[in-house]
Image (cartoon, rainbow, N blue to C red):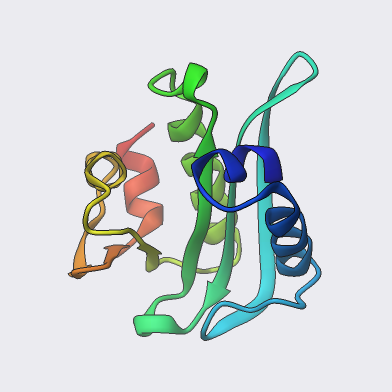
Length: 140
């Protein structure tokens, strides 16, 4: 996972520490609650993508998508969409319906992906799904 994140920015050691700290509840995004999860997409022996999220109280949301990454060769293959559906299911099981995600305003690709999956603007840096249970049903 660290290798996949480091391909975007930062070094692999940085991401190893960051991901481990996040999973061990030693590093906390603002307003994050302890419950968190990571799903990994594997093909053969290779990790091709992953998604992480946690419960939160940021912006009046119940959950936050922390990271989603898919290796370049598997982008636009449905891997990211399936990871997103898995995370929505986890959020629904946690009774978390309103989910937010921080997205750089210049990251047009990510913003388009989230909006195609029902997210709307919350503010210039954040998008929100008002109800992932309804959104999940629409995308099935």
